[in-house]
Length: 305
Image 1 (cartoon, rainbow, N blue to C red):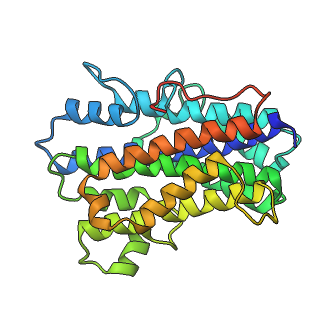
Image 2 (cartoon, one colour):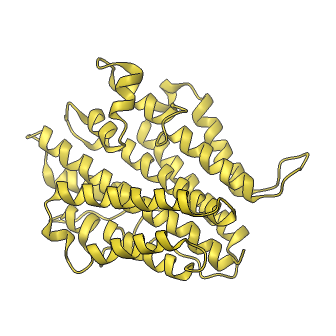
């Protein structure tokens, strides 16, 4: 596969996942703000901007910077635009259904249309459109190298953004339902209640989103998906593991998360999640060097990488 096509597919997965997960993080932030009327809204908004890699502002506008401002480098509107551009570059590889769905989504949200929607409707629309595109990719593309690159990009972005989402309770002030909002933001509330019951603790919620091997948005599940995709893209039938920097980084992070005592992880969760974000950044660089050298590498602007 040409490196430019592999690069485009990788970033389609990342951009679409970033659009969806940014939407989820902002929605969690708004719900937590409503739960705690004593919360300093300016400070909470700046904490969220810092969490997303942006500097603090005097009058922060979270909805504009992270949602519908097309000029903001980390808004989900910007991410959808970049996903469309990447899909255009890989037009001969992505299925017609995937291209049409990405293009239709972009045409539906551009030109200020999102800013005229109620936040709840906007979040639901973006989540559903990203889910439709992901489902079409899984159902209409051959699960060959191209699909593996798309899956790898989606998995790495989900690891990074879930790590950011898991850090939000630490900046939520005294919100009594912080972890409940995080579970809902991950689409995990129903699965969590089935597993732990309605009287579960915040610690149970954190462990579920970190370590549950069956829930597709838990960190351990997503790390497994990234390692599996990267392993299939590498050499096979080797007696010794391949010398792959990205695979070592992701495998080491998975082992640390899986076998480190949960109390140690939860003791300073934001710091541990920041380490995981750094792993995603370093793994992305290693993947670019190995697979995309010679192509014009895509880069995030404004985030902490």
